[in-house]
Image (cartoon, rainbow, N blue to C red; front, top):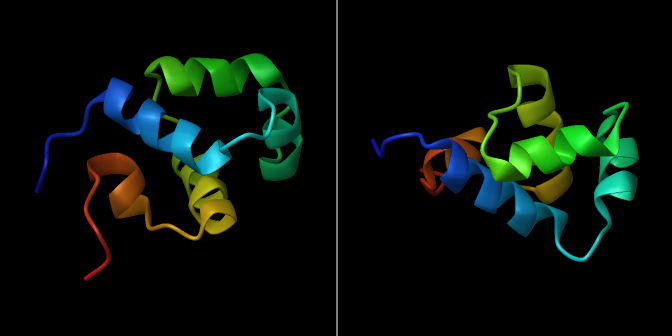
Length: 72
C-alpha cells in the first residue's frame, strides 16, 4: 500500500473536482465553506464522511483518493 500524503490526496481531490469551482464543489458535496475545499487541495485530509462524498461524486474509490490505488 502506498504512503498517504496530504499533498497527493489534495491533488486527487483537485482531479475529481475538475473545472468546477471550489464553491460549487463544496455545495455539491455538502461542505459549508469553499475554503475547506482549498484546505483539502493544499494537503489537509478530509474526514471519512467527506472522503465518501468526494469518492461518490467522482466515481472513484476512497483507496484511490488516499493512496492512488485502483479498485481491485
